[in-house]
Image (cartoon, rainbow, N blue to C red):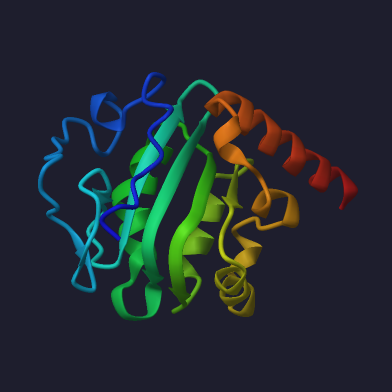
Length: 190
Protein backbone atom coordinates (compact mmCIF):
# COMPACT_ATOMS: atom_id res chain seq x y z
CA UNK A 1 0.00 0.00 0.00
CA UNK A 2 2.96 2.34 0.44
CA UNK A 3 3.27 2.61 -3.35
CA UNK A 4 -0.25 4.04 -3.82
CA UNK A 5 0.29 7.79 -4.08
CA UNK A 6 -2.29 10.53 -4.15
CA UNK A 7 -2.79 12.04 -7.60
CA UNK A 8 -0.10 14.69 -8.04
CA UNK A 9 -0.49 16.13 -11.55
CA UNK A 10 -2.58 19.08 -10.32
CA UNK A 11 0.12 20.32 -7.96
CA UNK A 12 0.94 23.18 -10.33
CA UNK A 13 -2.65 24.30 -9.77
CA UNK A 14 -3.09 23.66 -6.03
CA UNK A 15 -1.32 22.30 -2.94
CA UNK A 16 -3.41 21.98 0.22
CA UNK A 17 -0.45 22.54 2.56
CA UNK A 18 0.10 25.96 0.92
CA UNK A 19 -3.57 27.00 1.05
CA UNK A 20 -4.28 29.15 4.13
CA UNK A 21 -7.93 28.05 4.09
CA UNK A 22 -7.10 24.32 3.96
CA UNK A 23 -7.27 22.10 7.06
CA UNK A 24 -3.77 20.93 6.04
CA UNK A 25 -2.19 24.36 5.75
CA UNK A 26 1.45 24.24 6.83
CA UNK A 27 1.64 20.43 6.82
CA UNK A 28 5.16 19.11 6.24
CA UNK A 29 5.77 15.78 4.50
CA UNK A 30 8.72 13.44 4.95
CA UNK A 31 9.19 11.84 1.54
CA UNK A 32 11.71 9.30 2.80
CA UNK A 33 9.70 7.82 5.69
CA UNK A 34 6.24 6.31 5.89
CA UNK A 35 4.70 7.41 9.18
CA UNK A 36 1.09 6.26 8.75
CA UNK A 37 -0.32 2.76 8.41
CA UNK A 38 -3.67 1.13 7.79
CA UNK A 39 -3.91 -2.21 9.61
CA UNK A 40 -0.09 -2.39 9.90
CA UNK A 41 0.38 -1.69 6.17
CA UNK A 42 2.45 1.43 5.65
CA UNK A 43 0.97 4.01 3.30
CA UNK A 44 2.64 6.67 1.16
CA UNK A 45 3.70 9.73 3.22
CA UNK A 46 1.71 12.15 1.03
CA UNK A 47 -1.66 10.93 2.36
CA UNK A 48 -3.13 13.24 4.99
CA UNK A 49 -4.27 12.07 8.41
CA UNK A 50 -7.85 13.04 9.31
CA UNK A 51 -7.74 11.44 12.77
CA UNK A 52 -8.92 8.02 11.63
CA UNK A 53 -6.84 4.86 11.82
CA UNK A 54 -8.30 3.47 8.59
CA UNK A 55 -9.14 6.37 6.26
CA UNK A 56 -6.71 8.94 4.85
CA UNK A 57 -7.28 11.64 2.27
CA UNK A 58 -5.67 14.17 -0.04
CA UNK A 59 -7.36 17.42 -0.96
CA UNK A 60 -6.33 17.59 -4.60
CA UNK A 61 -7.95 20.91 -5.36
CA UNK A 62 -10.10 23.58 -3.74
CA UNK A 63 -11.67 26.52 -5.60
CA UNK A 64 -13.41 28.85 -3.17
CA UNK A 65 -14.99 31.19 -5.72
CA UNK A 66 -16.75 28.30 -7.45
CA UNK A 67 -17.30 26.56 -4.10
CA UNK A 68 -15.89 23.11 -4.87
CA UNK A 69 -13.12 20.78 -3.87
CA UNK A 70 -11.75 17.43 -5.01
CA UNK A 71 -10.80 14.93 -2.31
CA UNK A 72 -9.07 11.61 -2.98
CA UNK A 73 -9.61 8.91 -0.35
CA UNK A 74 -7.42 5.99 0.68
CA UNK A 75 -8.04 3.01 2.93
CA UNK A 76 -11.02 1.40 4.53
CA UNK A 77 -14.00 3.66 5.20
CA UNK A 78 -15.14 2.17 8.49
CA UNK A 79 -17.92 4.03 10.28
CA UNK A 80 -18.90 0.95 12.28
CA UNK A 81 -15.65 0.49 14.23
CA UNK A 82 -13.81 3.79 13.81
CA UNK A 83 -16.49 6.38 12.98
CA UNK A 84 -14.52 7.58 9.96
CA UNK A 85 -17.33 9.83 8.73
CA UNK A 86 -17.17 11.75 12.02
CA UNK A 87 -13.45 12.44 11.54
CA UNK A 88 -13.95 13.38 7.89
CA UNK A 89 -16.94 15.61 8.66
CA UNK A 90 -15.60 17.34 11.79
CA UNK A 91 -11.92 17.71 10.88
CA UNK A 92 -12.10 18.36 7.13
CA UNK A 93 -15.56 19.01 5.71
CA UNK A 94 -16.58 21.57 8.33
CA UNK A 95 -13.44 23.62 7.66
CA UNK A 96 -14.17 23.56 3.93
CA UNK A 97 -17.85 24.44 4.41
CA UNK A 98 -16.87 27.37 6.63
CA UNK A 99 -14.86 28.63 3.65
CA UNK A 100 -17.85 28.46 1.28
CA UNK A 101 -17.21 25.02 -0.25
CA UNK A 102 -20.56 23.30 -0.92
CA UNK A 103 -19.74 20.96 -3.79
CA UNK A 104 -17.56 17.96 -3.03
CA UNK A 105 -15.99 15.53 -5.49
CA UNK A 106 -14.90 12.38 -3.67
CA UNK A 107 -12.57 10.05 -5.54
CA UNK A 108 -12.90 6.55 -4.15
CA UNK A 109 -10.87 4.19 -6.31
CA UNK A 110 -8.53 3.58 -3.33
CA UNK A 111 -11.35 2.97 -0.86
CA UNK A 112 -10.92 -0.72 -0.20
CA UNK A 113 -14.06 -1.35 1.82
CA UNK A 114 -16.97 0.40 3.53
CA UNK A 115 -18.63 -0.49 6.84
CA UNK A 116 -21.66 1.53 7.84
CA UNK A 117 -22.95 2.68 11.19
CA UNK A 118 -25.73 5.27 10.90
CA UNK A 119 -26.36 8.14 8.53
CA UNK A 120 -26.37 11.09 10.98
CA UNK A 121 -23.12 12.70 9.81
CA UNK A 122 -24.02 12.18 6.15
CA UNK A 123 -27.41 13.81 6.72
CA UNK A 124 -25.78 16.69 8.59
CA UNK A 125 -23.26 17.22 5.79
CA UNK A 126 -25.98 17.08 3.14
CA UNK A 127 -28.17 19.59 5.00
CA UNK A 128 -25.29 22.02 5.59
CA UNK A 129 -24.42 22.37 1.91
CA UNK A 130 -27.98 23.35 0.90
CA UNK A 131 -27.81 23.77 -2.89
CA UNK A 132 -24.49 21.92 -3.16
CA UNK A 133 -23.76 18.25 -3.75
CA UNK A 134 -21.44 15.36 -2.92
CA UNK A 135 -20.41 13.42 -6.03
CA UNK A 136 -18.59 10.09 -5.75
CA UNK A 137 -16.24 9.05 -8.55
CA UNK A 138 -14.76 5.62 -9.29
CA UNK A 139 -15.74 3.78 -6.13
CA UNK A 140 -15.57 0.00 -6.35
CA UNK A 141 -18.91 -1.63 -7.13
CA UNK A 142 -19.09 -3.60 -3.87
CA UNK A 143 -18.36 -0.40 -1.90
CA UNK A 144 -21.20 1.41 -3.70
CA UNK A 145 -23.54 -1.48 -2.89
CA UNK A 146 -22.74 -1.07 0.82
CA UNK A 147 -23.57 2.64 0.64
CA UNK A 148 -26.81 1.77 -1.16
CA UNK A 149 -27.73 -0.99 1.31
CA UNK A 150 -27.53 1.54 4.14
CA UNK A 151 -29.38 4.24 2.10
CA UNK A 152 -26.41 6.60 2.40
CA UNK A 153 -26.61 7.10 -1.36
CA UNK A 154 -29.48 9.48 -0.55
CA UNK A 155 -26.81 11.97 0.59
CA UNK A 156 -23.94 11.00 -1.72
CA UNK A 157 -24.41 10.85 -5.48
CA UNK A 158 -23.31 7.69 -7.27
CA UNK A 159 -23.99 6.95 -10.94
CA UNK A 160 -22.59 4.93 -13.82
CA UNK A 161 -21.44 8.16 -15.49
CA UNK A 162 -19.53 9.22 -12.38
CA UNK A 163 -18.14 5.79 -11.74
CA UNK A 164 -16.75 5.38 -15.24
CA UNK A 165 -15.26 8.86 -15.40
CA UNK A 166 -11.63 9.15 -16.44
CA UNK A 167 -11.16 12.14 -14.13
CA UNK A 168 -7.37 12.33 -14.52
CA UNK A 169 -7.78 13.61 -18.09
CA UNK A 170 -9.44 16.81 -16.88
CA UNK A 171 -8.11 19.93 -15.28
CA UNK A 172 -9.82 20.53 -11.92
CA UNK A 173 -12.26 23.22 -13.10
CA UNK A 174 -13.13 21.14 -16.19
CA UNK A 175 -13.88 18.15 -13.94
CA UNK A 176 -16.07 20.30 -11.73
CA UNK A 177 -17.97 21.71 -14.71
CA UNK A 178 -18.55 18.26 -16.18
CA UNK A 179 -19.89 16.89 -12.89
CA UNK A 180 -21.93 20.01 -12.14
CA UNK A 181 -23.55 19.82 -15.60
CA UNK A 182 -24.25 16.11 -15.18
CA UNK A 183 -25.87 16.59 -11.77
CA UNK A 184 -27.86 19.60 -13.00
CA UNK A 185 -29.29 17.53 -15.87
CA UNK A 186 -30.20 14.73 -13.46
CA UNK A 187 -32.09 17.22 -11.23
CA UNK A 188 -34.05 18.56 -14.20
CA UNK A 189 -35.12 15.02 -15.20
CA UNK A 190 -36.52 14.35 -11.72
